[in-house]
Length: 431
Image 1 (cartoon, rainbow, N blue to C red):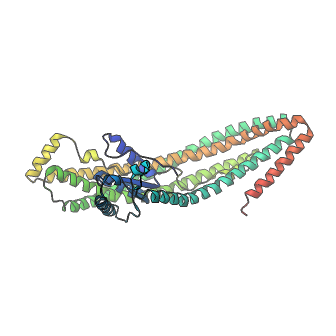
Image 2 (cartoon, rainbow, N blue to C red):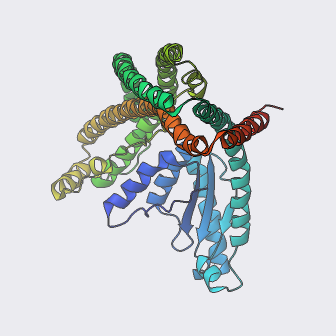
């Protein structure tokens, strides 16, 4: 479990809030800490809503209970739970009231601190077991193949004269260099496929905007009817907040759909690339029998993206709440004479900008995942190719001592390696 303490929101440093928002897509579970005094703020609610849209596992911690009376603590807890249920539109589950200060000082009333620690330990064990078990199985399979190949190389080095092994290693280096060039040629084909995928994503984004924008404008008009205030600056703020809600309502479901479609296209592109790489490895195996024959099995063809999403919905707060004194004065005057046309026009433009910006960010995030996933796959293939000659060099280096010590030493080393080979085969068998 990796615990990351993100910067607080609402700081005088605007970058702190932005850094926290950028980190949200990387979170598997969140501990959201709010204060008992004062109660939950508007910025905290906005962040919790954003986290709730990206993270299923959320723990809410009401801290600083030592600063309020028992009655105030009960009121703050009830108020926070009610507001959070409404904002997340789902029950928040466990709610923990703690005093970090009392816990540090060792005083009696630390609230639910021990219960919170037990909950974290339980969740870690449950989530970690499935992840580590699956990763362990894949790792053992790959490592077993690698060990078997390394042992085979060492046996081969012990059974051949050193001069022949050195000549063979030189040939392996030449073959690896040729394979690198072939891989670059395949990379050019991958780039062409990647460009077609990017064009398809762009076309899908334009199609989405054509259909979503009229519906979103209609929904925004209906939402704004419920706004009662006539004070200009407050009217602008409320209408812009409605635009953010409507835009988010359209963008987030489309993000899930777009990621699924893009991943499906990426899997098809990747599978073609992997098939071409495996064909290359088979050609190498025909030229260098025994050395490249196992590489195809070591190439892990992980389905889907190998890189995670970094997307988060950009509220464009600086546009929604402009700091210009002239705009503020203008809003006051327009509100006083009840001219709402300019507010509606600004809100409609803001909605369009929200949709355009965030759909562009969705497309950019998917394209980044394609690029990073491709880089990871190509890196794996290159590492496998380089490992062949590297393993042979290591095998020759380890064989020099027994070869120079005589036939008895060579025979003992061969017996040891054969025993290791049987042990690895037994340990890696499904039974």
